[in-house]
Structure formats: C-alpha cells, structure tokens
Image (tube, rainbow, N blue to C red; front, side):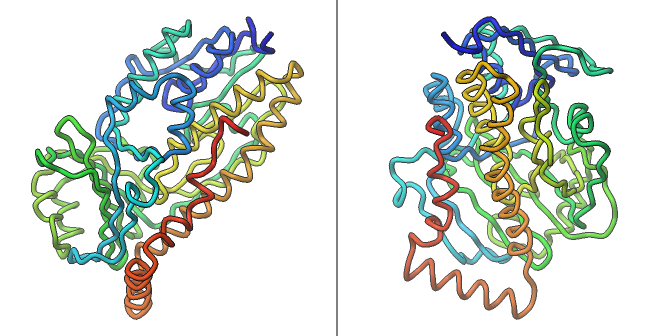
Length: 373
C-alpha cells in the first residue's frame, strides 16, 4: 500500500508547482486540497519552454497526449546578435531526436493541470486568501516568490535587485512560424521570442537599468518604452515590437535557494524554494520536477519527516546548479565591447565545427529523469 493512501495534504498555490504536486500526490492516494487566493486560474502574457526532464514527469502522470495537444515542438534554439546575425544554433530535433522540447502558453498548461487534478479527486478552493498558515498534518508551500510558507521555515530574507528589468508580451504569430526559440543578444540587453501555438508568439525582453521595479511581473508597462529600449535591434525584432499593444513589466530580483525546505510537516516547492532568473528556461521545469520527487519520497516512506528530508537532499543540489547556470547566462547574454566580440566569435566557431558540443554542455540538465530518482 502507498504510504500516501488517505493522507490529507494541503497545498498553498494553484500554479504549475502546486497543481503538478496535487496530481502526483492524488494519483498516489493522498486526499489533496489546494488553496488559491485568485478567484479563477488564469494567467495571461506568459510563455514557457518545457524541456524533456519535465516532460518525463508529465508523461508519468499520464498527461503526455494532452500536453502535446496544447504545446508546440521546439526544434532548435538560435542565438543571434542584436542585428539578427546568427551566432550559434542548438539543433534540438536533429541532435536529440528522442527528447521532447516543447513551448506552451502558461495558461493552457495550468488549465490542463487543473483538469487533471480535479479528475484525480483534488479539491481546489479558489478565492481563498491564506492568513495564518493552517495547522494541518502536511502543508506544501507552492506559493511562489512571495511565499507565506518560506519565511516560516527560513525567517525574513531580503532579495536584491539585479539591475535588470524585463518586459513580457504576446503578439500574433506568423501562420508558418517555425518551432524555433530565438535569443537576440545586445550590449546590456537581450530579447527572446518563440511561438506558442494557436496563433500566439511570446516575447521576453530584458535590459540593464538602475531604476527599481516591483518584483511582481503583472505590472502594466508602456509598449513605447519597450520599443525604445530595443530600437537598435534588427532582424524580425522591429516588426515584432511594432505589434505589441500591451506589455507586463517586472524587476528581476535574485533570491538564494532556500536553506530549509521542510520541517517535517511543511515543505516548499517551485519558486517558493528556489526562485530563478529567466535565463535557462527552467523555472516551471524545476517546479514540475519538485512535484514528482516530493510525491515519490512521501509515497515510499511512511515516516513523513524522513521522507521530506530526503526530498530536500535530492532536490536542493540540482536546483542550486540550475540557478547558478541561469545567473551565468544573465552575464553572457549582455556582454559588451571586445569581450562580446571574442565570445560571439568563439560561439560561431564551436557551432560550425562541433555543432553538438553546445547542447551537450547541458546534458546534465536534459538527461535528468525525475521519475527514476
């Protein structure tokens, strides 16, 4: 019998982390309740890249066919300079044909997970603002960077502003838009874009600037400011930005990976445990990995405190490695002057002479199988 059979579990947060955990726990027999402060599960203006390490979890949950239907295959990643010239290319479809790299609108992923959770018997309470943390046998904090559970385990912490501000927008996608994620790199700024299916294209643009912006990413921005910040970019960027009618803006803050993920009856997953800068496309992926490993640890050991300790021991080093890699990419995308010229020349040479080397640098990331841990 599963150690989770009939175990009551309360999850705070109905985002990707919370709903994936709800599915994984409920499928193992737990009685799961999800508390969500929003009145409805909807998110706008957000695209996600989901790499094979997370797709393995969705497949293990029986959700691959549903996920495939709402997402787009990512065939390659192109790194380009600010005028649009190719610097490097990671040919995912050619060099990793057995792996699934996908691109999806976050709202579609959340809707899919919500339906799967409800089908598994999960109770989802919307419009539920959590004041004091509930005294329950097992509480999972999947409540993001402004988590209520994290300070209960780690005390007060102060993130610091990285000096970077990001915009996020959706525009209509070209009818024949290829499944390609493109990164345009300029001095002190970069722009990422990829199609999401159903006629949508995602844009995320980051610029170094000293002024302070709130950490939340739902603040409305001015499309004119976005266009002005990237006025010198070429290729398809000017046409894309001309189509932006509304844009969200947020400041990028760096948080440490939490020192304490659990205390025997409460645990953190997703951004509540390890917020990351958006430069490795692994924020949602780490949340999905967390959800599976947490459920598997609790399922295999009736001693809850020991199971939660094992969960942290398995997840903390990997998440720290991913967060560190994202921090490094933040620097690499924004190089200036001679350093930028040398780095781009090196990438061009490697991409031309050893095209598999760039992607295989991340084999540790993509080959990881949470379902086999």
